[in-house]
Image (cartoon, rainbow, N blue to C red; front, top):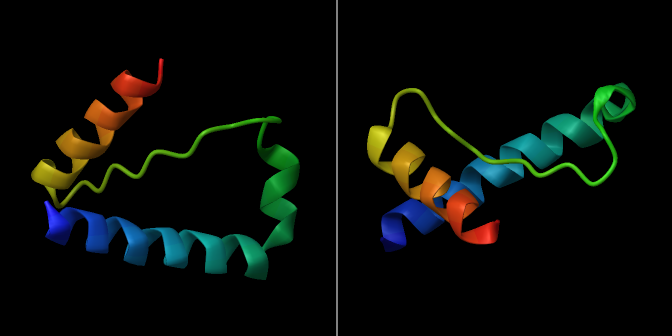
Length: 57
Protein backbone atom coordinates (compact mmCIF):
# COMPACT_ATOMS: atom_id res chain seq x y z
CA UNK A 1 0.00 0.00 0.00
CA UNK A 2 2.86 2.42 0.70
CA UNK A 3 3.93 2.03 -2.91
CA UNK A 4 0.48 3.07 -4.12
CA UNK A 5 0.51 6.11 -1.83
CA UNK A 6 3.95 7.15 -3.08
CA UNK A 7 2.82 6.72 -6.70
CA UNK A 8 -0.30 8.79 -6.00
CA UNK A 9 1.82 11.56 -4.53
CA UNK A 10 4.11 11.52 -7.55
CA UNK A 11 1.22 11.60 -10.03
CA UNK A 12 -0.50 14.36 -8.06
CA UNK A 13 2.67 16.43 -8.29
CA UNK A 14 2.69 15.92 -12.07
CA UNK A 15 -0.96 16.95 -12.38
CA UNK A 16 -0.42 20.02 -10.22
CA UNK A 17 2.63 21.02 -12.24
CA UNK A 18 0.63 20.65 -15.45
CA UNK A 19 -2.23 22.75 -14.07
CA UNK A 20 0.12 25.47 -12.88
CA UNK A 21 1.85 25.54 -16.26
CA UNK A 22 -1.51 25.58 -18.08
CA UNK A 23 -3.90 27.66 -15.96
CA UNK A 24 -6.38 27.92 -18.84
CA UNK A 25 -7.37 24.32 -18.04
CA UNK A 26 -9.12 25.60 -14.92
CA UNK A 27 -11.67 27.40 -17.13
CA UNK A 28 -13.00 24.05 -18.37
CA UNK A 29 -13.24 22.44 -14.92
CA UNK A 30 -16.42 22.72 -12.86
CA UNK A 31 -16.40 24.34 -9.44
CA UNK A 32 -15.68 21.93 -6.59
CA UNK A 33 -14.52 19.13 -8.86
CA UNK A 34 -12.79 16.03 -7.54
CA UNK A 35 -9.83 14.53 -9.34
CA UNK A 36 -9.31 10.78 -9.17
CA UNK A 37 -6.14 9.42 -10.72
CA UNK A 38 -6.89 6.24 -12.68
CA UNK A 39 -3.73 5.22 -14.53
CA UNK A 40 -4.41 2.88 -17.46
CA UNK A 41 -1.12 1.03 -17.00
CA UNK A 42 -1.58 0.20 -13.29
CA UNK A 43 -4.78 -1.74 -12.55
CA UNK A 44 -3.94 -2.15 -8.84
CA UNK A 45 -3.54 1.59 -8.35
CA UNK A 46 -6.64 2.31 -10.42
CA UNK A 47 -8.73 -0.06 -8.32
CA UNK A 48 -7.37 1.39 -5.08
CA UNK A 49 -8.06 4.97 -6.16
CA UNK A 50 -11.57 4.13 -7.35
CA UNK A 51 -12.26 2.41 -4.01
CA UNK A 52 -11.36 5.69 -2.29
CA UNK A 53 -13.92 7.50 -4.42
CA UNK A 54 -16.58 5.05 -3.26
CA UNK A 55 -15.70 5.82 0.38
CA UNK A 56 -16.12 9.58 -0.16
CA UNK A 57 -19.76 9.39 -1.22
